[in-house]
Image (cartoon, rainbow, N blue to C red):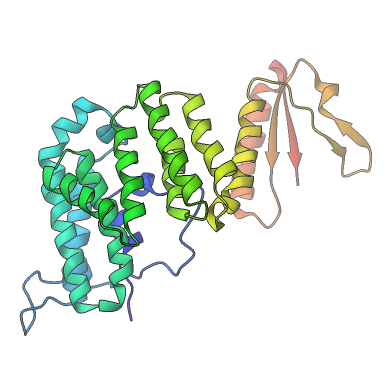
Length: 303
């Protein structure tokens, strides 16, 4: 049966930036019916709307929300957040109501819907909706499987409420580290930490502290997956502004090193004959070479 949900709801709302940047849902992405955007909003016989009708309404609400949350700063900047709240809150609540309808017509989607609803509950709390803040607090204390996720969400809210306060964010990360040590296999804690690292960090040090908790205190599948990526990204960041030497063998068999081009500007183009975007870019690469070679530009193609 068709699967809507977590990814559809988040992408429709334009909230992809809130999803972990180091992992993608491995499940099959939800399919969107071609007729959903034209589906009537009125309930079908029996008083329940069809999945297509609900999806059409979710898609419409998502488009509206995307216009309100045009950039991450709308949520992170206190002034922009306050201005956007009266528009964003009703739209998100409409989407939550739609997700509740989904559970009624597709009970097997309950787990996915619960995860999506928690995401929306978190966003509503960021915007200061008192009912959502209360509900999130109750969920955090309920002792259910989602309680740990709700506790992480509460810390994420506190983190995003202080995007320029390094000390406040460090305190939040201290609390997240306690949760991580107590629940080392939790993927949701790791995902929340990566949200913190990639969005709204007050400083590079804060971002790296969030990453360190993932790599040192968590042992779950998510932490193992992103550990190598974190190391790779750090290596790239450390290389910014520093000389990089590339060496290898040219197509004619002779050795080559970029140190022979010391003092020149070097554009390194990684490409392959099977890579259509790479091939499409070659005319621009050649044009750039012709225009700037006399000024010291060299281009190194790596197949």
